[in-house]
Every structure is written in C-alpha cells, then in structure tokens.
Amino acid sequence: MTAPAAEKRAIILDCDPGQDDAVNLLLAIAARDVFDVLGVTSVAGNVPLGLSEINARRIVELSGAREIPVFAGCPGPIARALVTAHHVHGASGLDGMNLSTPRIALQPGHGVDFIIGSLLAAAPSSVTLVPTGPLTNIAMALVKEPRIADCIREIVLMGGAMREGGNITPSAEFNIYVDPHAADIVLRCGRPVTVIGLDATHQVLCSRPRIDRIRAIGGPVAEAVYGMLSFFNRHDSSKYGVDGAPLHDPCTIAYLLAPALFAAKACHIAVETSSPLTIGHTAVDFWGVTGNEPNALWIHGVDADGFFDLLIARLSILAQSQVNRA
Image (cartoon, rainbow, N blue to C red; front, side, top):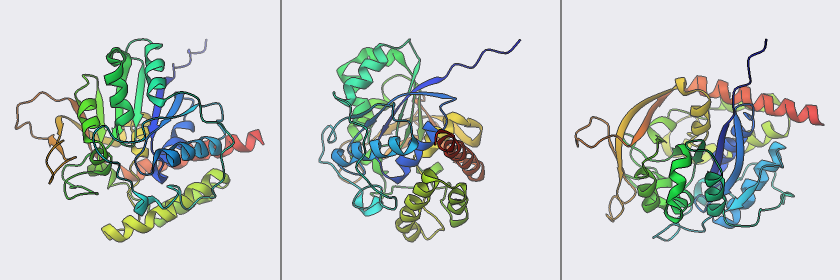
C-alpha cells in the first residue's frame, strides 16, 4: 500500500525582480512537487513596476511554467516616493541574462486584488505569502480586506537587518526602507511572520566556485542564472570586499524547503516609520529587553554550503524537466 502524496503548500510569490528575486522565482518553480504556486505579483522596488512585471514574466517564461499567472501590483510605496536599486541590478533589473520580450501575457486586474481573491477562496491558514521586495502589495491587501489574515498560513519575507546594519542607509535594509509603513502593517498583522534579513543573507555569498557549479548544470536556466549572478556580483563584491554578492531573496524559498539550514529566534520586531535619520530601521528585540511579545521569527544564521547544495539540486531538476519537454 503506497502512502498518500503530501499535500502541496499553496504559495503566492510577491517580488520586484531583481536578479536575486529571479533566482527565487526559479527555485520555487523548481520545487513544484512541494509548492502549489498560485501566482506571482510584482511590485515597484528594485525597478519601477513597469520593469518589475515584465521581469517577472520573463523569469516565469524562462522556467517553462507558462501557466503560472503574473499580475502587476502597486507602482509605489504607501506614503513615500519610490526609491529603486538600478545601481545594483542594472538598467533592466536583470542585467547579465539574455533579455527578450516575454510572450506570456500580464494578467488583467491588480495584484492586490489577486492576493485578496486567492486568500478569500482558500481554507483558513492555508496560503503562504513570500514577499521578496517592498511589502506594499501585502500591506495594501491586508488594509483593503482584513478578512484575508485568517487565510494566511504564514508570511516569509526577505527584509530587515540587525547586527549587519543597513545596505541602503546606515541602519535600514532596502526592502523595508522603500516602504517602511507597509512593513509596519505586515509585522502587526497577527499572523506568523518569518523575517530573513541581512544578518542571514550576508552569509550566503555567490562566490565564483558556487556560480561555476550553477553554470555546469547546463541549459538555458543555468546559463541565465550564471549570467545574472556574475553581473550581480560586481556591485556587492566591491562594496563589501568579499568574493561574491549576498544572494538575499532565495533564502525565503530555501527556508520553506529546508528550515533546518537556518538558525531562528522568536523576536519582537518594530519598524521606524518617521525618523529622517533611521527610517526603515528594523528594531529586532533579540534579547527581549523591551518585554514585548515576539511578533516574528527572526532568521539570523544559515548553512551557506547547504543552501547552495539545495539551490543547485533544484535548478538541476528544473533543467532536466526542460530537457524532457523538448
């Protein structure tokens, strides 16, 4: 008698591609034996919304999973002017790979409405949200339709910093800095939130031997990832004086696939939303000095070699599936 197949985890990927967002999308799609990818929503962040949604469609098309719907979400933060990161990701956001106009269509309707509709149609505590850009879409969905909170299983996000300091200001990580008001809403939503910030992601470096292993997989996906990460490396390798840029966003999906690779602690996290000096700062109460109850699981460590073994194994599966379809 065979055991019943495990039920897939329903997820929505919310992103602003960005090379590391692109790798995260590919990693999630490569694990569709584990995940039911309900859709992809794009948000303004690393690049403006017009590029973000095109890049999301490019990566979904590259993966071969053309049936996954892609929606455009919010074009800017809730209460601030948009800040982008072209200096890191290049003019396209995906510099380093062969760019073409995606053939899959952008879905009609707003990404926030897709998130709301998907959650209201789901069972309680059943859908995982995986945002890897500014949290505007997630926050706006929670504000527009508070009932969706009951249907969220958990939110696993990339953002924030504690001991590492900031990467866009001395105290703020980029995703939280771009829309701190959205981050504040998400962290106070009352659902389980896992926060993977720079303290963990700066341990996951795209060193030359590691990206050479990715290229050795062969095929269009591996070549695209190799090209993107080669470009991505140039900025942060120089900035931090290390061999390889931190691969931030794929830590979210890697955590869902293999949580044992990560070190975590339940903490209270608050976001500064008004100070001109420290706006976007994530105040992580790691030692419980405030007495506030934890509202998030803070990821502060990762087995980097295990992470890259997982990533390469999953990208190899995706590459083989494309060979089989050819």
